[in-house]
Each structure stands twice: as C-alpha cells, then as structure tokens.
Length: 492
Ligand code: ATP
Image 1: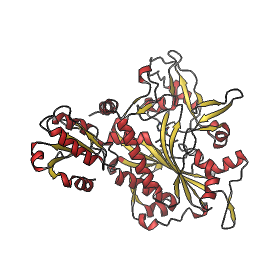
Image 2: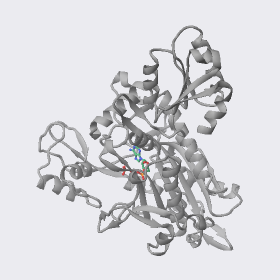
Image 3: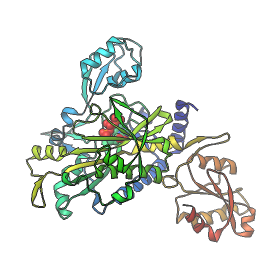
Image 4: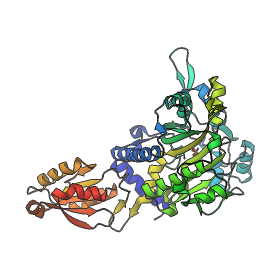
C-alpha cells in the first residue's frame, strides 16, 4: 500500500471513529488545528501516563509542573525566540499562497537548506525556476523571515504584548529558582511539563504531523556541568546498543549499533547524555514495542541544530505515510543558555551554590511532540489485511482494552453480556456493543485497536463461559466467567 493510501485510510478511521478530526470543521477548519475525539483523548492520556511513569520514574529527583501557556514578552526576549524563532516565508505573487521557502526547495530539489540565509534561498528558487504548488506560476516574492509565535494583547485599556508559548520548556526555566529551593537545593533535578505549544507554522501540511496548536511532553534536567560524565545507573546501560545515525559532512549515514560505552568513549558523548539516549530508546522499543528497524536517533549537524544546542539527536520513527523517518522528539544538551538568558533578562540571580562554588546549572532537555507520536503509532501499527483493517496497537496505548458482545441480540444473551461487561468494566477500559453481526462488531473494534474481544453465545448461558478473541492472531479461547478478570489481567 502506498503512503498516501495508507494515510487516507488512517485519517478515515481517525475522523470516523473519534480519534481526531479538524477543529471547527462546520465552519471550514483552519489548517493545523485538530480536536481529539473520545478515542484519541483516551489514547493520548495513555501515552502521557506511560511517558510520565517511565521518565519521571528514572530518578526520585524528576518532578512534573504545570505552567502557563501565555507568557510575557520579556520571557521570549531572553529566550531568543523573538529574534531567532522564525521560518523563511515565500509568497506566490499570483495566487498569494504562502510557503516555507526551505520546505519548498527541499521537496522540489531534494537538497538540504540548513543555515542558508534569505538571499541564498531566493537564489535557489529563481535559479531553479520553481513553481507555486498551488497555481503553478513561477513568480515568487522575496523570501522573508516570519516569526512563528502567536502574539496577543494583555489587558483591556493599557495593553501589553504577550505570547502563546511555542514550547513547554520555558516554564521549567522560569520555575527553576523556586523549585531548586523547594527541592532541597541539590542538583541534578528535573522538571517535566506536559502541555500545549503554539506555533504559527507557515504551511502546516502533513495532516496531523505539523500543527499550529499541539502537545509536548518535555523534561528539563538541571545539572552541574562538572558532573556531566557521572551517572549512577551507568552499569545498567553500558552494554546496551544505541541505534545512531551520525551526521557526517552534512549528511546522515546508515544506522550504526553503538554500545553506550562506545558512545561515551569513542564518540565522546557524556554519560549523562548517553544514559538518557538509552532510556529513550528503551521507551520506544520496549514500552511502545516499536520495531527496531523503525527507530533511530539522528544526529543534527551544527548547521541544523539551534545555536544554543551543543549536542542534538532527534528521535525519529519511520512513518510510511510521511515517506520515511520523521522527528517525533529530541535530546538536547542546551548548556547554560536558558538560565543565563533569563538571569540577564530578569535581573534575578539564578546562579546557585554547589559545594561552595557558584554555578549556573546546565540543562539536558528531553523533548517529545505528543501528537506526532500518536500519528506515528497509528502509522506503524496500522495493518490492512484481506478482510479487515486493524490497528495492532500495543495494549498500553490502545484506547479501549476489551470489548464485550452478545453473539445475537436476543434470548437473554444481551443481558448476560451486560453482566460480563459490568464485571470487566471495573478493571479495564471496556466497550459494549450489540449492533450488527458478530463479524461487523469484530471489524469495528479491530479498527480501533482493541486487543481482546469477549463474546457470549448460547453455551455461555449454560456453562458460564465466554470466548476471548485475540485481535492480532484472531485466535479464540474459552474462559470461565469467574476466571475472566484474572485471565485478562495476565494477558495485559
Ligand atoms: P520541526 O523541525 O519538525 O519543525 P522542531 O525541531 O522545530 O520541529 P522542537 O522545537 O525541537 O521541534 O520541538 C520538540 C518536539 O515538538 C518535536 O520533536 C516535535 O515532536 C514537536 N513539534 C514541533 N513542532 C511541531 C508542530 N508544528 N506540530 C506538531 N508537533 C511539533
């Protein structure tokens, strides 16, 4: 199946069954805004809970906070977003459609544009006679830089500019001093935030992948730079093999399996950094059961990464619907850039005393886009079989865990099935259905990724047992109702 066809099938399931759909559709939705429906909300919450338990579980000193989405202008002066957070915009003079100049060039010419200024992008467009993707005219205006933050006005009379935050990261930096004191004044410690981010993307194509309002789960770890090569858990990961695609002369090579020990000694990545690479990879391969071949860390060259990032590997998943490996997260070594900027901008001392010496902590950032992760899971676990389409989602993120059906809608079977539903519902996210033939009911829950289905038939009335069907293998097992909950608990 081609990527485009697969994408349409997934979008069809997502919108029809309640995973997600364009926001304000009845008014003609605006690109880049999506609403999570009832199944999508469940799936997203499960992903978030898994992320929370897993990453906050890595250390007793990693905590979660919840900050504001609207922040004062000064925050973004200090963070550099007002001057640097921009994309190159180019407008077609004929139809006035706007494009991201770098995307247009990269897609049309298959070349990389990192680090190029507006003049160089302009030259590439003109020298190659690129045409507007909308009206095909070959007449573009000059490339201009466009700041991606949404500005708002605070107050009714004497207004002041404020911005919707383009990343959750700023809140932990702004909270650093208070939390450092509240958490007994010791390093390292981590502040995570799961929240919304807002970016006025120029042309949010790629459906659910590039949004204007989206969710991030980020963890900022504050540490003493002198301890960057120390890691209490090193023994547990040193032999673990990372899947790394190194950046060599501006290009990324094939994935190499590199042990953590080798990454540290040969490739000079610090233990703190490598340990978190290993934990991120284990999150994807073990918790989310992503096939190894569909996961990689891609090193970003110095041209590609943000200027404050000393080391930056993107977490990438191979998505057929998007034509290959795409970024869903990243591990960024940001140095003291953020605290330094806020210390200077606010005039508030953020330096702290560690073992009698004054330091400004450095930051290691684990950053994930939740919506992109959701799309990637749908892409990777979607299967089109002869008789059915299914999402073979790992049980930890499947929105509904169990479905209960009566074989037929009469002779006391629905009543008995509802009793079983009540029993199972207390322990698992469960759905009850009695509309249509059993085959149709199976197809409906296969499509939304429900791992187990329970059917009650005439024998169930006599023997008090049910059929449990496995979504992926379609194998069926007979289980006594009294043993059902413990049987399912074992499966999960
Ligand atoms: P891209 O290069 O795709 O624009 P980015 O490198 O600017 O992304 P970051 O600023 O590192 O992204 O943001 C962290 C994470 O937030 C990304 O890895 C991605 O998963 C998610 N993200 C960023 N921009 C968007 C967006 N417009 N829509 C959905 N998710 C996004």
